[in-house]
Image (cartoon, rainbow, N blue to C red; front, side, top):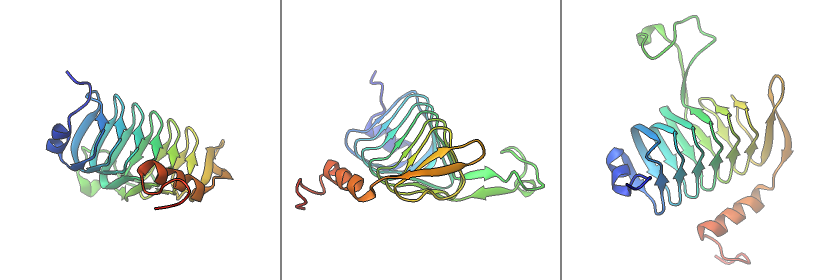
Length: 194
């Protein structure tokens, strides 16, 4: 048996479009998925995918990642990568609220934060990081391991986790990185000709 789901199987699961050379491990779990998988996408073993997912081309989702598009869409731009054990949430209990929590509690007793999440083109999110509802990670940004992202990450920012909060420690050349991505995607020929 092929270790990856076929295009037909992925469409039957709920995706409306699946690009070329898509490899989603049969050891990944997919629940009520919808959306799109671009071309040249790889989803490694033991990932959990649920809800609305819009995945660009040349995207790698490392082992043990969790993408939960149940409170809004999870959008992964072309050329982005998620390291192992990254969790992306579009819905989460509001830990500040004086309410109960959990999926089994009647909704009138729960406060939930919701919002779409976008990881930009050519961005990377390091292992064991958590992206909370409503966060946007800009194009070509780099997020180090074990960061908890509760606010926007600027394009080209290099963010690492400190003892108490994440901090931007450097900037990447967004234009140069996106030009390379365009070459890979076949949108621009070497030397800049379209």
